[in-house]
Image (tube, rainbow over all chains, first blue to last red; front, side, top):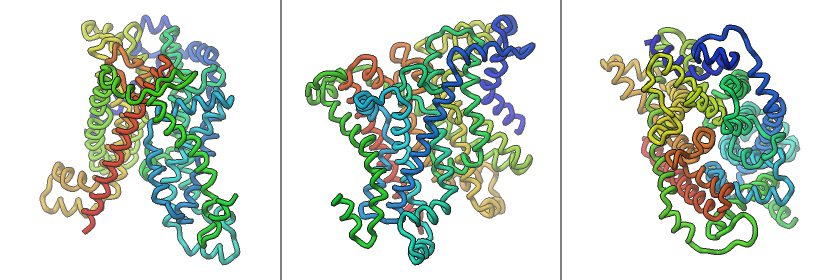
Length: 265
Length: 305
């Protein structure tokens, strides 16, 4: 039974292994030995070629800045909204929660054209800023929904104690609520960061110039052009895989906590 | 100004202020564009110049557009690859990893296998598309190269370029990417289950299969439900993989609604028609979400004794 499972796991991982061994071959090695032969030596020319051609360092930086910005805005807005709804118990919170829930399932195609039009007319088109704002706000709909239910069960004694000590709303939020919910906020931040990193549709529409593009958009567009040789193609795939796998390894605990606490795509 | 003053008045006051930045931005980024797209769907508009109000024309045109029907038919088939198959395989794998591997070979082995199956889930979908696009390339792709080397020339196909094979091939890559998600959810769900229930079932003489069907599956029903809902909605929204792998082709054999809308917005300068497609898709997703929520609420009510 275990052997069957290991073979299955190997089959799932096979595309990654194929990409890894062929990214470090020369084209002639691929032609003679095929995709399954092991490379005779580490040939990094395919990787270097692709890195330079796609200006991959810049793509990584773009992806990183956009993901970081969107995650920060998303967490800040989620926290403020959830503080008002979950702890403040505002009137009409039911309607607000339904709104956040619907915002969460909306397909991006339903929002894209007016946003594209607005970005063009405000000179924000083809900027990282436009994507940071859009993704930050969209993520915050999910965050507000999830955090409101967490804050709804926040220990009232702590809030009462803070108000007896004379702390205002803002001080209570900053010194009591945020420190206690830090682990939930970390999960949200991680998810917002990775979701933004993986996004394709909005970056494809908003970022036309090569110097602004993110990793998925740069790779997705090059794929369609069919102008690369086989080892450069697998090199490009490997470079796209590595950052995502790195995040996965770094945030593994946070991610598995998040997936199962309802932090779903 | 007067609005914020008013909000401060009641005893609970002060909190409304915290909602202001979020609601302002949500209005600008979500509410206004949502309404705008709905309005545009009743017009003929090229993205520039004046809008021509044409009432329901875009929607009646949709009803006669075979691309539109093809895109929804494809979604129906893709649900098999993104919802049904991964959920079934995920259930079986979760039960085996939890019940057999973790007990016999330790939790680390189970965790290792779980991570292996989950790995495709962490990649951006566009990168997944690049990986498979290379493997499946008819001229230099790894799959056909291997098939030719071992003499199985007749099995080598133009996987993504042949209308007969394109959709099944896309489905295979989607199922590959999707299996890890239900697996992780179901394993977490099984951890929640009280071990005494298994022991009781075992004492009653229940075999492995019966324990799985009578104890495990009913108890992780909430997780199964969440997985089915979220993956169904994800299927309706699918875009990136299609964009990278096939561009909806050949013909319209892998066309999906979101890609169809994208083409009308940005390639055909047919913004009104694209908006109508998006609006139909949105309506379907929202209705589906509401139905699912209702069913879930009812289930929770009846489950409570």
